[in-house]
Amino acid sequence: MRSATESQKDSAVLAELIRTLESWKETVVIAPDTPDADALASMFSLAKAFGDGDGRSAKVSLPENSLSQRLAFLHEWANLPVATAEDFARADGFVVVDTAKKSRCNLREDVPEDWDRGRTILNIDHHASNTRFGTVNWVVGEASSSAELVYRLLQAWGWPIDPLYASLLYAGIHTDTSGFSLPNTSKSAVAAAAELVERGADVVELGERLCRSQRLSEFKLLRTIYANTQLAADGRIAYSTADYQEIADAGCSAADVDDQVSVPRSLHGTRLAMLFTEGVRGKTRINFRGDSGVPALPLAKAFGGGGHDAAAGAIIAGPVPEVVAQVLPEAESYLNRLAQKP
Image 1 (spheres, rainbow, N blue to C red):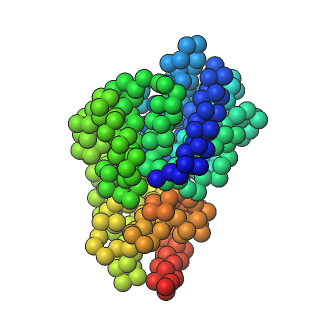
Image 2: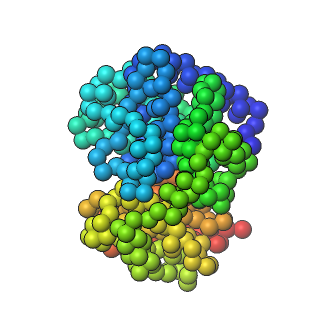
């Protein structure tokens, strides 16, 4: 639970966010590269709210091949225009959601490196490792999801939450808590989800789309993850892999790699689960998931990554076998160090 002082700080930041948003006419809302459902839900909800305001226009930063096959329906529901390089140049300022580092912003190749050019960035995130790169930073590490924060922002803004907003935001909270089953399933997260259901969130359709609508390509990728799952450190570590060719052969791309780390994580006795995937040739992404008492974030930070205590990630240059050989010994050493602590 947030302390009185933290709640006061939240109120002050929310007021500043709202004042800034109301002073703009055009903005671009940005999520991280390889955006998950929480990132997309947060981006779409905030962009819709801004763009539905009188005389305002919002675009979303969604380069080609950014959307996974499973989550493409969220963009179809939101029906928002995608930002061009010209939109970046015209924007009064930017909103970045669910993104721990500025370098992880999901941008088109033709957007210049100095895309913000001194303009205001509103940084809204729930990653504890967020670098506070924004002009205004609202980072709440204990929040279940960025969607929960965007919901709180829209409430403070007095924005009417119709069934579409409710469905988008519910999707973000549901997925980032893994169906309300992870330690980040807080009282506030459950309360927000209940309120969103009251406001019309389509729980049945979302359950079908998010949990029971795998395409054959996604099923093939999942089959590869199962086949490649291995144990290490006397069963305390479970990990799996998918290299660039295996992902392509399944008919998938980097955008389709999301929660498959749940496969090695599901093995009994596992304290640390890892998924190594080469969605982009020559770059291996690692998803870390820690069991109770095994925070994943310190290990991810050791390899230049970030995230949350229980769920974190990193990207390392190199093919999958080389990265596994680099990370696996350090992961085992990390577990051994934790076991030695009183």
